[in-house]
Length: 462
Image (tube, rainbow, N blue to C red; front, side, top):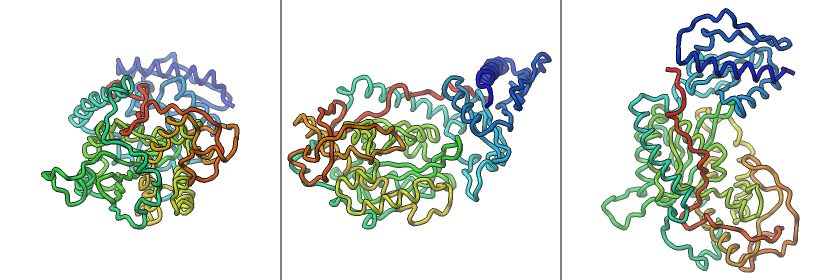
């Protein structure tokens, strides 16, 4: 194994010298720099010329295990951008101090990193802060306003949460997912042009065939969303965005890889996600969804309810239920079909075009029931709070392992159910009091202050 202490010092020296070179930009050869030899691995001399480049190549001789350790070092303690590139036989790590450093790696090197016919189009779909300066400056200004909203939610939730009506528990007593129009019975549209995206946003806001002058038009107050990613090595990029809202029974599947759509998403969808009057609903959105919206499109999510987090609170566990299991719990008759679709399509290459009908069906299942799930979870969380008792959630193996760690819990009897929820399946749970302090009719704030960053602070090579 590579000696990590020596490699860590090498990378730390590179980071310091690269920042020095960034301020000088002289590119003068440092005659005193020497190569670092660690076993069979030869790390290059850290000359001024080398440290002035947008990125640094590490040896191809590093094993996969060594590369994983170096990736961890870069992430945990060195504050370096890092990526794995090259074909399997010549795989290597590149590191950089620059947010846009890897932009200068030839596209063919990125494309040779992964097998298969479908690759992510890095050159056409770049993170939003690579756009022209006017667009970037405008978006940065908007983000500062959005950050203030998020800080208000985090610091003063009791003053920030808004309401859009009451939650009538008696009216919702018999509600379950069987009352929600199914994926098969709901129309959908694939959004693959900028013109379609603009119409999509209009319909999400007001419904199909809307009349903005009509005071009785249903206004957008709940927006369910999910995303599918290209996730190969250390490269994570958005390949699909699924949306549905309270304004109509229609689902939208947005294709960011279609011509022009990627660059339009920032301005078209950004106002919806940052509007505190619109509740965003997702499942496990703290994993990759929120971070990908920000990284790829400069979109910040303000006012969100996470059904995975809510199920975690409801079942007194660190692990929230996976979405198929949660749908089963709340009476979705086709939950087994959804589970099968998830097994088949969750980890496919979402860059592939055209996407199959079944892949699109899976994407729609991920958002179709979220709005009603949120109401059901709110109903049961409020009951838990009122009767000071545990609910009937399964404390078994149905947690969402993609976002949370498994936690072993003590088992009690299946009789510990809410007295008014006898239709729930037989499940075990230990009694405890649930604190729903941040849960309200309008939403639950899931983004911590620590997650908010300003890209204006990121160094740029250009």
